[in-house]
Image 1 (tube, one colour):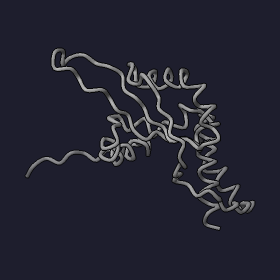
Image 2 (tube, one colour):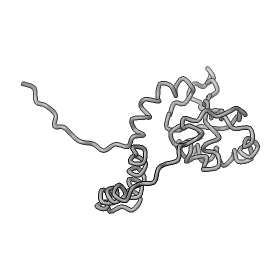
Image 3 (cartoon, rainbow, N blue to C red):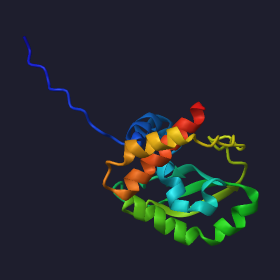
Image 4 (cartoon, one colour):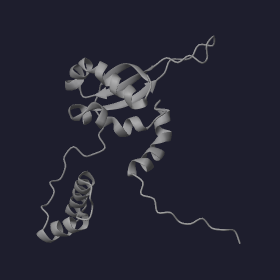
Length: 167
């Protein structure tokens, strides 16, 4: 009988699973690293998070004379028309943030398309129902044992969101 591997319960971030699922679709769009789409709101900030979306990242062809040469690519971004001019003025900072995220100069230029952005979340969010005192106390009890403040607050927020959808 072959020895079985012990079961390991691993706590992995949900983003790790999403990235694996997104990778084939992202490669078709030119995103060798699907991570860019996942961290996009953090890179562009609150102002542009809901109104912009990276569409493709295209790299120039390598020359046959020097196949090891690398030139940065052009990132195409969909942007709501009203914010495109503001985003245009902030492209140098955005290029710097994106390249800092990748750890090398992946993006050399940004091309902005003024097109509607298809957001995964619905435009009209249903207002959340207020939690009952019992539900709120149950969530507080569940997260009280967590020492790290940021994690505790994130889990409290998640619990509130889950419970408010059920009611």
